[in-house]
Length: 119
Image 1 (cartoon, one colour):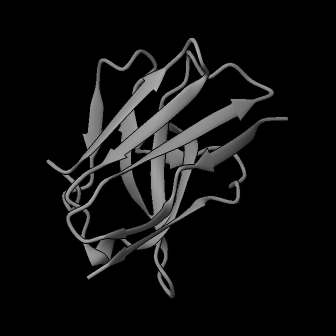
Image 2 (cartoon, one colour):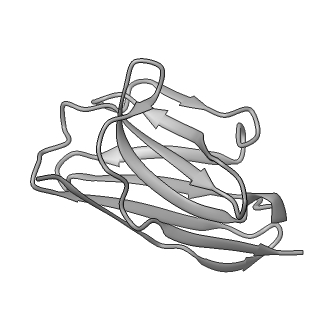
């Protein structure tokens, strides 16, 4: 059974940065495309970014392009999300997951990590 554990969230002022990590157990991620998603209070979960199996291709939601960077280290079975120039509207719980097709999540969701951006 795959377990995905997100970490690195916190409280930051607008304009600040955070780096999220997604560690996996129960499965090697090195052959999987992976994505980050977020869910703001009272809203649906939405796609943020995705990366292919070797890091050679990435995609981003328009709202985070130029500010967020997804990366991975297959030797550590970990995926990262570097978030810069954070805005209050980035406040959400952030989740990672394996993705297929049009960035459709595959596994059950983990607990996520809370990111709060103050103005």
